[in-house]
Length: 435
Picture (cartoon, rainbow, N blue to C red):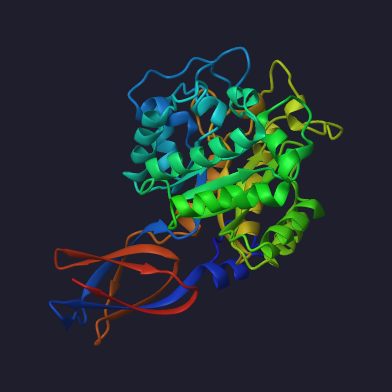
C-alpha cells in the first residue's frame, strides 16, 4: 500500500509491506461463472495481526452492572477482578472496538477466587462472550503467578499448592474453552522463586521444585485441559535470565506456543534499536512473539532509579499536552517497529484509558473519556494506512481483480451478494470468492 503523503516514510515501511501484506489476485464467480467486466466492492473486515488491549474496564458493562467507583489506590477496586474505574463505559467501548480485535481478561487468582471454592466464573464468562460476540479473540491472564495469588494458598503445604494450582488450570481452561483460546499460562517465572516482598504460596512452591519443573507442571496441565489453546510463557525480564529459562524449558521438552514479552515503558520509550534487538534475541527460538503488556506514558516519566515499578506510588500522575504529543509519536514508532518484524504476531496495550495500573497516564483516552492524540494516531495506522476501506474495482475478463492488502479477513460484494475470503500469507496470493 502506498505511504501516506502527509508523513515521512519510515524505514520500517518496506518491511511491513513485505511481512504483513499480500499482492492479491481475487477471482470472483457468480453461480460458478467468472464475473467478468463487473464492478465489485472489496473491503477488509479484520486484521490477522492481533491488535490487543486489556478488557478489564468492561467487566461491569458486559455484566449489566454499574461502573466501578474509583478508590484510594488508583486502578484498584476492592472485590473487583482488577478492572479500572470505568467512567464512560459505552463510549469507551465504542472507542475500544473501533481500534482493537483482541482482548485480555484478568484471571488473577487472588481476585478471581478470593474465597476457596467460589471463583468468579460467571462474570468472566459473560465478559469473554461479550468480546467474542463482537469478533474479538480473547486471552486469559494469568493462570499461574506469584503476585495477586490467592491468600488461602499460604495455609496449604507445597504439595497441596501444586495440586490446587493444576486443578485451577484445568477448571478455568475447561470452563472457558471455546471462548478463551489463548492463555498466559505462567507469568514472571524468572523472579518467581526469589520474590521476597511478601509471602505467597506460588513462590514457596517454585522455590522448592524449581523454575523448569514449575513451567512443565502448569503447561502440561494446560495442554491437557485444552489441546487447541495457544499457550504463552510471559515475562517482564528481558535479560539473559529469561533466555536461559526459555532454553531450559525447551530442552526439557515443554511445548510453548508463543513467547510473551512485557514492555511497560513507564521509565521511557525503548526506541527502535532496543526493541528490535530484544525481538531478535527472542526470535531465535523460532516461536511467535507477543508483546503482551505495552504501556507508553503521556505524563512525566518515572525516575530511572525505581527498580520495581510498583514501588512508585504518588497521589496524582496527570497527563500533559507535551506528554500527549510525545506519546503519540512513540506509539506510532513502536507499532511500526513491531509490525516490521515477522516474528511478532500480537501486541496488547495495557489499558485504553488513564487511571489503571499505578495510576499512570498510560491510556490512549483521558479520564474524561476524550481520545488523546495517541488514540487517533494508532487508529490512523490500524484502520487507515494498514487497512482496505470499501473499494470499488472492476473485474477483468477472467473475473479477477488485483490489489495489495494487509493480511486478514475480507469480503467482496456484487450483484446483491457477498462472499468472505482471507489473506493469511504474505507475498503473492491467488484466492477465489463464490457469490
